[in-house]
Image 1 (cartoon, rainbow, N blue to C red):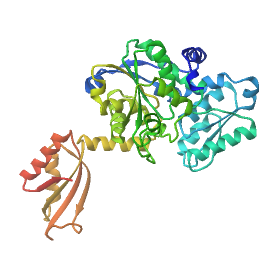
Image 2 (image 1 turned 90 degrees about the vertical axis):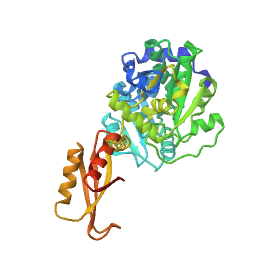
Image 3 (image 1 turned 135 degrees about the vertical axis):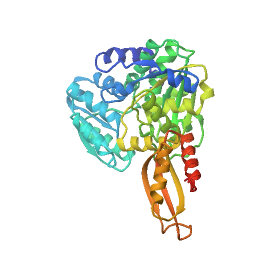
Image 4 (image 1 turned 180 degrees about the vertical axis):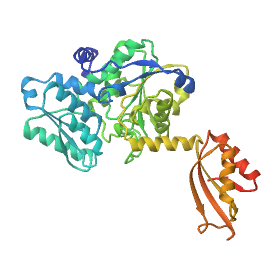
Length: 402
């Protein structure tokens, strides 16, 4: 079935989706372009109503159901964006939607999916167990199964992203697309290569979930258990999508968790846009492999914006530590009255702000008359941290980074 996906399928999907989903902006980021040394164009799919491109495939699939299928309803298995896309468009089209989610699915995603009128069934501890249950329900109740990626109508819907990107920026050299099950890249590659056979299409997976890379390249990268890019944490690549990728995708790259964290933070700080881990995978690839794209006009898809607020808080904090804007230092001094006041006054003179203080007497290797004070500081960066340490040393205290 996979090689049968064609440009006319995607153009027909685009006509169906007219007015049902957003034609999201695709614009240049001048600052990111300077940083990575390529001309970077961003496709803001995180601005869709459910904050993900997944709506496109879901809507295209639901719009083609027969009267009988519409009457019976649909079932889908997903712990994230696909669930919301199916639930939202089923509600809009007046269809019954049953969404099977693994039991560990975060409550916020369950409630959001229920909010779109879907019946949520929590089943199994893994996506595989949830999927098996969804197939069983489809059989039992006569529901139509809407696969998150291994379906021609779904992939055709996702391919409309590629049509819009090439309409907005016709002379792109490369498209860099996150890969989980492969629905997005299969659709985009089909559209892009038909319109522009010379365009380069590159897929990106996290090194913790390299299933498609292993399947297509014959490598044996180990599979991890978790990633901040949970939207592309797929253990079994799609059969139909894999065939398209083997035929049309020029290269598949791997990125690390740190690359993805950095990309999420850069998009937040520079573009003032919020993406989830999977949505930052394309930019992560440009940060990890800058020489691969230097001087090219590169299109990236910010494919989703549904990130857990606590995860985002952790990413921001870790990013501040990496850039030196949050630093932990250890100051050793003689344990006399007023020493803590002297230390805090010296830090203040150096222009840093104290976030935490830990005054350590017992758990230290210092002499009994000495005290060790741990400080977490807000600073302007690595250089400023060094200035704070010099100020403390000039005041006859021993000060080091922790």
